[in-house]
Length: 133
Image (cartoon, rainbow, N blue to C red; front, side, top):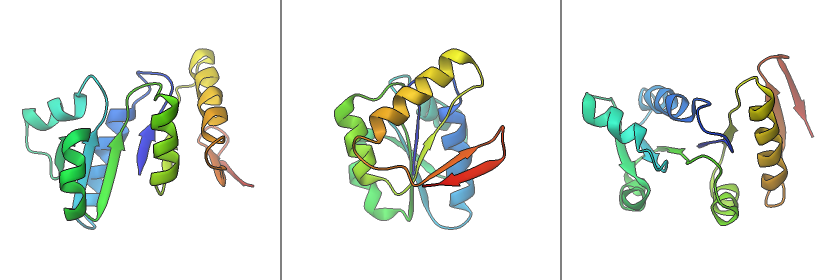
């Protein structure tokens, strides 16, 4: 699963850390830190996370040893990266904060993503509704 957004500061790394921690309770989990800030790797270096954290170059090496892989992307992935994510992940989680600029970035990301893969479900936390196309 991949956590992404066109905007930084919306909680991608925090969400990825929590997802990896939960998934680790079910089966071995790997968090791939694809963000240039390397925040997940910094968290990992500070203490004992219950799962392994690697950068995207190491991710290829370690992926086969894990049941669950969570990818923390950089803000505003390039079109080729977005295409790779669309083709390769089972679940893409797009995050946004509830402000106009972040929501505009979210809509831009959705429009870019659907060029590569149709969206089959949309969940809005604020409306508590799920729409399926």
